[in-house]
Each structure stands twice: as structure tokens, then as C-alpha cells.
Amino acid sequence: MSVLLRAAAGPPSAVARAVIPCLWRGKYFSSGKEPAEGSPVTPVLRHLIYKIKSTGPITVAEYMKEVLTNPAKGYYVYHDMLGEQGDFITSPEISQVFGELLGIWFISEWMATGKSAAFQLVELGPGRGTLMGDILRVFSQLGSVLKNCDISIHLVEVSQKLSEIQALTLTEQKVSLERNAGYPVYMKGVTKSGIPISWYRDLQDVPKGNSFYLAHEFFDVLPVHKFQKTPQGWREVLIDIDPQVSDKLRFVLAPCATPAEAFIQLDETRDHVEVCPDAGVIIQELSQRIALTGGGALIADYGHDGTKTDTLRGFCGHKLHDVLIAPGTADLTADVDFSYLRRMAQGKVASLGPVKQQMFLKNMGIDVRLKVLLDKSDEQSREQLLQQYDMLMNPKKMGERFNFFALLPHKRLHGKSQTNACQSKPSPSPVAGFGELAWR
Image (cartoon, rainbow, N blue to C red; front, side, top):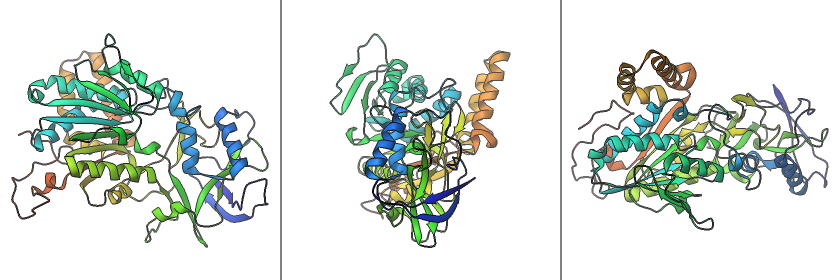
């Protein structure tokens, strides 16, 4: 499908706008030419139309931010979008084995880095709390290994709706939660296994200290800026009101360079790119923390290593959805550029991956775990387990669409102290998932 993009020289009411003769073939979303009849005028759409009329076209990043996290009507703020009744299903919602293997990964890394007396487990965007629940079950099962370690759980979540679901999933309902809406820790309690748990709206609010970080399908919903290469150079894709239909949006091109263009590599060869400054800020924060206090970060998401172009898309009811239609009713997402995350770490920490989910889970021993579960299951449960395994591992399903990426201290991989590169250290053990898991 093709999109005719036009440039905005100013607010719609102020000046006429010149049309740039540029055809852009969008892979996932509207060409802007579909009929508007039957498309609901949502509260978010009304807000955006007012905003654009007041200040002119907005960036795709600003559009995503408004649609997903607007405090009044944002998709993530008031929707429970996960599971069969939601708009998409994540790996933890498919099988408990996924979360169990990630729990093993964190314990493996804790052991490999010296079995510290305490660590924080921090999850960014915890969904319904299903993944954290599976990880904590592994922690309980391996309590003899962790018995001398002081663990605390820290969840970064902007959605009040989801934080309430997470609390129901993870905490004893008999224990009342402390709520402080105006404080960095807006809710805290104790998990079913007795581990302290706290909720924050921003990573910056999480206490610094030896921490392991988890981000599963978190980076893909951060706002992206989109750019198209033109004869005049890079031009940012913006969103404007369709002059033919007053309650419909369409894509346009900026008439000149915009600030976010600074994030494009000078040697970029693609003709269309997406950049995510927010992801860069978070990676830099994680890198600084890990370099300073140890730990590590495990990132799992669908993405690429700097090769894809147009990946922005919407999901509603488990189906692809036009990103400009009925904003606020569907999830918006864009593939993660792992090469960009690697650059944003700026060498402060080592990076591993991305590796395909199929390879990561295989290295983590999913086949062994599946066999154990199959041996203990009846025929109906075995069929369900095999279907779950196929969804996670099949290259045509999640097996090759999702990738794992890790940030770790340099000394974890090289066995050397950063302060004295000549000081020998014991040979480091392989990093689980990125090589075959080996217990010591």
C-alpha cells in the first residue's frame, strides 16, 4: 500500500501546506486512503485533533505516547490488554516453563557473579505479573540455594490497572498493600513467598544497588521517531489531520530537518528508519547502574539488529490494526533495534545477543524441562504442553520472532577487574542462554 506524504509548514489554520511528491510503502498500517465511515471518534482522537489544530502535526513518537500512556485515556493506563480476552498474548501467558527458565537464568548469573548477600530483581513493564510469579516460584523451589541472600522485588509500571492485577497475582491478599500515590514508591507489600515488593512509575525511582533487571516486551512499546530518506535528505514522518476528512489522521513528511534526526547513524544505508530516544535513555541508565553496582539485565523482545525499516503496527483483538484508526483502543508497537541498544550502552557494560528465543530457551534446557513435565502429565495435559512448546519454539511462531539480549559487567565476561586489567581472575563461566547452561 502507498502513502502520499505531505509537508507541514505550520499549524493547519495558519498557512497552506506544500505537497512533497514522495510515495512511502507502509508494510503494516493504513495508507491513509481507507474510508473513515464506521471508525469511532475516540476520546484520544478528539484530544489529538485538538492538539494538532493548536500546534501543528506531531511526531510518531508523540502520537504513540499520547495513545498508550495519556493519563486520562491512554491504552495502557486503563486497559487489561493481555491474555485471550485482550489484544495480544505474551510468552509467559502461554507457558509457565518460559518464566521458570528465566528464573534459572537470574539464579545462574547470581551464582556466576559471586553469590552476593543481597540483590534486587527489577522488572520493567511486568504485564499481569505472570512472568514474575513464575520466576518467584523457581526462587522458592531453589530456596536452599538462595537461603542466605536477601532478595527484594521492584516493579516499574505506569498503569494503575495493571499494577492492581500484578498485586493480586503476586501478593497475599490477606496482607494489606501500602499505597502512596504521590511518592516514588506508590505501592508496596509482600509476595506470597514473603519477599518485599514495591511499585514505581519510573526506573529512576528504583533504589540503586546490586540488581538484576528484566524487560520482557517492554522496549517495543516505547515511542519511536520515523524517518524517510528523500532527495533533500532525511525527513521525519509526522501525523496530521486529513484535510478531506476532519476526524481522520494521516501521515506527512516534515519540510525540514527535525531534532531527532541526530539519532540516525551517518553511515545509515536504509531508506526508512525508526529511532527510539527513550530506549537509549533507559539503556544508558541500566548500563551505568550495572557498571557501578553489578548485576545484569535481560531483555526479551521482537526486533532486529539494525536491518529492518518500517515496523510500526497496531494490535486489537489479536489482529493487526490500522495505527491511525480509533487511537486508544489498540496496542501500538515497533520492533526493537538491538544494534541501537548496543550503541547506547556506550561500552560501559558488555552486551550479548541478540539470539533467537528458540536458541535461548534450548540453551536454557527447555527440552529437559518439557520431558519432566510430560512424564508427570495425563494425555490432555501432554497435548497442551506440546502446543505451548510449539508456540514458544516454532521458528514460524515465536521461536525466531523474539530475541534475547543481555547487559553484563565487563568483568563477568573477561574475568578481569576493570580497575586493573592485568590482574588475573578465575575463568568466567558461560552466560546461560547465550551458551549451553552449565551448573557449577
